Image (cartoon, rainbow, N blue to C red; front, side, top):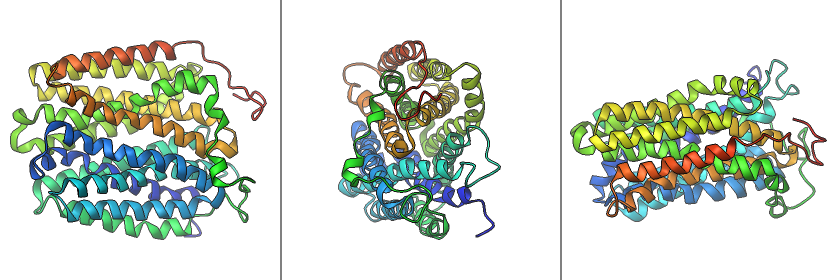
Length: 407
């Protein structure tokens, strides 16, 4: 593996931690029936995932800043394997499902903070002389998005046509996660006593303090936009398949898979273009992405109103464009704000806020006795519009004592 560009060796860990966390999403309608769940309990499978993900993002980032990226990434792969094993062993047990989703979320949190920072650092000219501008943001965001999408696609197809839909997808996933330990072990370390970037002179607890999170550009614009990254995904492939379940019938799992692959595939496709457009618009790609969020949620509301699966597919495409645009422009902004020793920490905080969006379907389902899906979705579209207006404010140059005014 010596001839492989170092950043490519770090890709499988992020890819398969993302796979191991999101491949469950097309199975939500299936487990709704297998475990005899009510709507909010089904959507809470996404919420429980978030509760594991947030400490994975924040604590793992601090640990990796002190002890290195590699050992924490390996711990993430182990967590993903444990989470998927628990779900495999307890398909009808709500406690096993929630616990398994917690560990899967913990793994994704580790991947998104540690894996993203690792790939970003290995995409610098020191490690990759052929690197291009923006590669440090584009490579990890694409890796993560493709992992989410491929995991959902493979699991969805297996669940629809292979025997034992509650077993085979998890056996495949666990096998892939275990095999990923090999390239991860060979990936160069970027932080630590023997690495090019020395660890900070504080404990990992001290590393939890991230002063750059108080930067006005992060607090006002990035943090208010971030929940819509996975708010779009939660609505597109978490909520819409349940809304359309009666219409799609026996093909609900396939429909859910289609929405997940479309949303994430379009999200991956648009990211390089969104990043270029963001540079041309002097940082205004973020409000453009939020405008797409508003349009996509309104389209989802229309689909819910007349129970139209085709309109649901159109909504997934628009929400995929929104997802990819807000993700990559938000991450680009984070990497401009954070000083090198806070990169993993601020990246973790950013992703923690993005995953608040996966709680949106639970809130929407819980409000179902009070108002129909279509009405609640329009309310959320209004909230996204407010975020868009905030993001349209003047984009500050990113200044601070740590970056000497660099953009």
